[in-house]
Figure 1 (cartoon, rainbow, N blue to C red):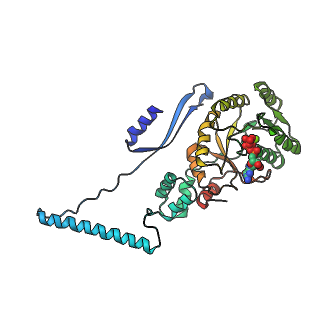
Figure 2: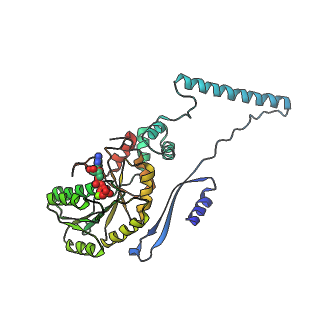
Figure 3: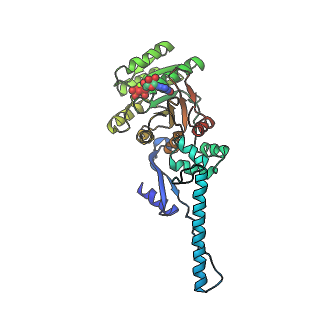
Length: 344
Ligand SMILES: Nc1nc2c(ncn2[C@@H]2O[C@H](COP(=O)(O)OP(=O)(O)OP(=O)(O)O)[C@@H](O)[C@H]2O)c(=O)[nH]1
Ligand SMILES: [Mg+2]
């Protein structure tokens, strides 16, 4: 990390602002030649335009003094005119001048830094330009991929994010709408009622439910359902601050050899908790971001910050408690519009 920061400073200068850092193992070559990778997202302020004193053609000191007096007076007049214009427009003169686009993004919950970057890129007014600036930051993975053999799809994330409900939605959708064979595997033997919650859905769908208490259980369950198109793996909710329990979950999950790991975060959680979750759950090799509870979130601008913080593609979004209806495959244009509109 230190080397990477030094390199960033060498390339961008000392005035850089680090927006985001992330460290992970590169799992190229089937994990044989794993090496640590450090990602740094940094911004550099462009230098402020320098104000030059008016250049007079004369060397005469009296004239130079008059010149600088005129410059000073002109600045004061300009300042007063600006204040009067703001008062005319009924705006608070103590607030910095914000473009409508910047104002809108901030109201929608986009972070100040991100909103400024987006409006610099898009210009002050245009919705189309703002939408494409947002869209450039949002990547989507598409739905569960079953093309290359069995998909083993794990949902991990903080407590109460909506993992079990989303596991049920996915299982219902793929069983009822896509005609796939699905097995459910839960690694949540910790929370009271957790197994029963998923068992109810499994019964309705007539899908097998396996419980993985230890590595051997998980191995056996995966083996037993090797003929299924999809195994959906629900996991215990863990706080992003609980490192040792996260390690334990990582060990158990590895045993299931998931082909996709979706970090499930609630759109309604506070931005700091969402970003902490992205950092903490990275050790579980998450490769997709699944955002729940869009219906409950008052300000969806945060989606663009999530996209940049995680550098992960969005997989699905959920927007209600109905199984399986309140689930959709994430789509770049719709997510960009949600950031621009602010809510559903
Ligand atoms: N409004 C709304 N509620 C949701 C959505 N998804 C899940 N919920 C509700 O959120 C609550 C928690 O959902 P669970 O699926 O149990 O969450 P979990 O992540 O499995 O929770 P733990 O296993 O305890 O970590 C339940 O009341 C769900 O009905 C959603 O998209 N919108
Ligand atoms: Mg659960």
